[in-house]
Length: 365
Length: 170
Image (cartoon, rainbow over all chains, first blue to last red; front, side, top):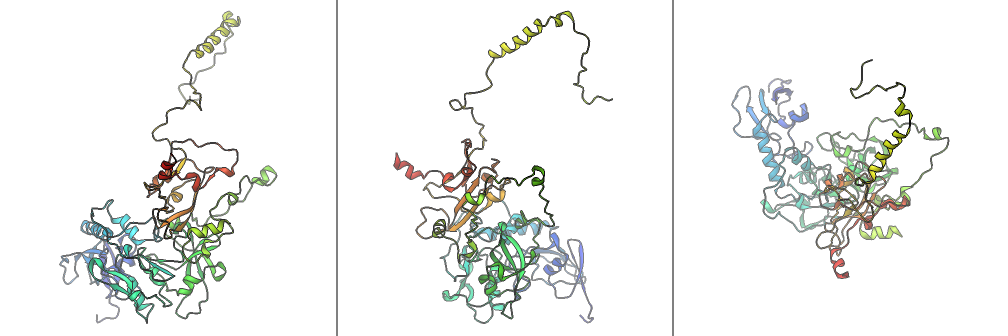
């Protein structure tokens, strides 16, 4: 590395890219983008030390480097393997990798409860995407799945340990982003390992809400959004506000339904990683449209279920029926008068936690 | 001009023969066809008393299923509403409270569940999408209504009777 401008040439799935020394294979693949990029469940580019745990990003290195062209004997975790000059990597072109990834997905799903119908993460869950793309249809596991005693970790975040895949992202987030009081960690080992707030303490840090965004599965979800709606029925909008917290960028994504703000998250990039961290006040307290300056609809991948029913660049067609029949058409049924759902005078988003049976009983009166 | 189909027949415009001019033979020919139909098998059935056998894949009115213990199966996952091409299904979910375990199977349940039968096209996608075996299309024909307001079916209209309560009634 004598010259300043030295770049390493890496070939991933026959696509060559030039990267700086010290980048990992995964980052090089992300530079190419598309199908070539290995999926990552535990690696998070914005968290130091993350990666190397979930093994979903395994790739085959079929040529170590220009100087040492021997292939690496085993599949390598691309998030932790640095590139070498002249390295050749196979990801989706290698049957070994695809087979291994299938096995990894099966391993990750061994203890996963698969309660997607109940889980709030469904629709934006990385494990869901991963298992659809790389997993098998059925399970071969015959034993009881691991269960945990349910732990309440405060009013804002709900923890479902059964769904956790132990990626450690939230632990790194608690250490690095919400620094200071480290109360969040992994207890026990092996099959019994669990994410917990030590001694059952509440998480009080201003930035601890970010663990919700980094969690690739539904283990850490927003309690203020719990069971309110499915993510694909809400409309993601980019918005910002002037946050008093100096570390908070105030740029968020609002998940709206009509004029109601159901959920606030950080903006995520194409790899599902947050663009900038936001504070708890923005995330949990500001659930009104007037708190925010709305910029416009967020860009969601066309292949995501969240983009269903959200059309872009459409023009509203002019209404002509009144001109054709010479009068305003008579409305035969106002659905809000009949329907109990989405009543205009009832705001689910204003309830603090999840709705309960008594919330609905009170509403009917 | 080239013929569009080989089944077209050119109209015979030649003047009528004496037999055709006599008019009565043609009337009689027509009557025999009419009378002949009286003795043929009827194409209709007397509907409310008599019913046609349904096809095994017939899709009728929706039901919301309960499990063996009478708990509601629906967890308001929203997949039926997502699959619905007519956007007929809406719902609102709520969390099960302690003490309500005998009512709802999962920790999340549909507090409100509505199917707008004015919109429903009985395609059965909701049944197919349901991961919890909660929505089924029964073999009951959709009844007609006098008012549009009664065509929005709420959860009470859709839920099947409680299996245990039903037994005690007998």
